[in-house]
Amino acid sequence: MSIAIMRKALTGVSGVPVTAYDGKGEVEPHITAQVYGRVAAAGIHNIVAAGNTGEFYALTPQEIRIVHEAAVSGVDGRAPVTAAIGRSLREAIGMARDAAAIGASAVMSHQPVDPFAAPSAQIDYFCNLADACVLPLIAYVRADGFAVADIVRLANHGNIAGIKFATTDLMLLSRAIPAADPNGALFVCGLAESWAPTFTAAGARGFTSGLVNVAPKLSLAVHDALEKSDFGRARAIVNKLEPFERMRTKFRNGANVTVVKEAVTYAGLDVGPVRLPGLPRLDQHDREELHRLLEGWKADGDIRSDPGRRDAKAAG
Image 1: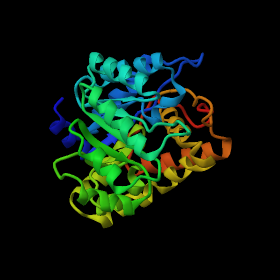
Image 2: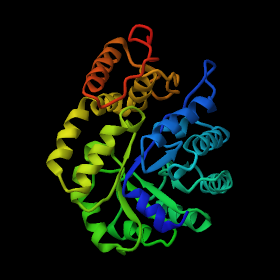
Image 3: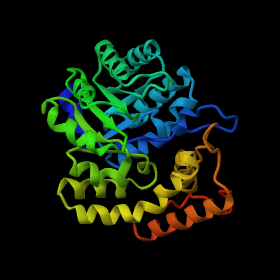
């Protein structure tokens, strides 16, 4: 996919589906493909395979390839598939080559997690990876300490389609966007719907979402409101989402994926628990609170009613 088309897709919602596991804790490719198929059918603009909501760091490189393959199969050409890659630079380059062979549209490089990663050297990591990729790259920036010049250097790279900006350093964002080449990388809100209005006001376009696994209609409604500069409507929808997103931040974000997977399972598609060190399952109180919230959304028509859904007791 051309970098121009990929940048256009990034102005929309970049959904990050969950990874399904079977009863033995192994990646279940058929159910995982179903998850991706549902997100694609909902009209999500860009679909990220094996992102953080897909438990990238809990997967082996071989499992990441399985998820990428399931994503391409499940999406079936209805949207771009951005394959998440990362770890060491050499591993990331290998993953990028595999993703191109599988049929991905682009790749997204996770933030390096090396404890000794210097800010400017992290930019070098992204740029070296972009040099080696035959597909457009999205750089996932979530650490602090970058200078405006660092982010501008990243944004101006010829093979970087976008920057998933996932820190709350809005001063850096608001200074980097006007300093960068306007024809360069797109700055995308990497902190989901809750932060999307603020990031949009600072000049970012599009946002990432784990909510698309459960309620893509609400994600698309936020996007539509922001595209029309209707910040009041966007904020009203975000307020409705707040209990869901706040549950995900528990335990220093340790419940982030857990809440999403519990919601998907409650809706009728059993995707299994979260792998350690994430929180495997919600406790009874939080699960009941989540189920009440989901039933309210269903009553409002925000999520579809699935006659095959297990009831709250069976979901336990």
